[in-house]
Image (cartoon, rainbow, N blue to C red):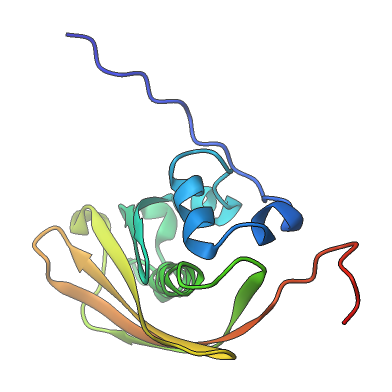
Length: 169
């Protein structure tokens, strides 16, 4: 039996008016379906979007030698970027059309280190609360045995997306 042909992932930035016209969940699910490009950071760090539902997203990745710091383990910035991305995308999934977000702050707790021997990991972002102006989410990185590698929390600012040509209020 022949394996299905999977098209290569396209990377880029979706135009703001296109993104703003969709709810956050519709946008993230369209990206997951390949209708919109994946952000370039996904190519840079080698992670993919695996699941997206209202209030939660999951990324898959495998730490590599390219992610190492000078002491021979995966740099903490790799985990921090994965967590910030997953928590932010989870927040995005609860926003209506025309709204966006940005990270105000986040805190990471590193539980165990990562190396190339860690193997595949999952990064899960989950919204804890979403209000009119702020949203709070948590994230966790789990190894293939569901052991916790890192945990984080974030506060995001929620705002109206600036769309060119939009009527002034």
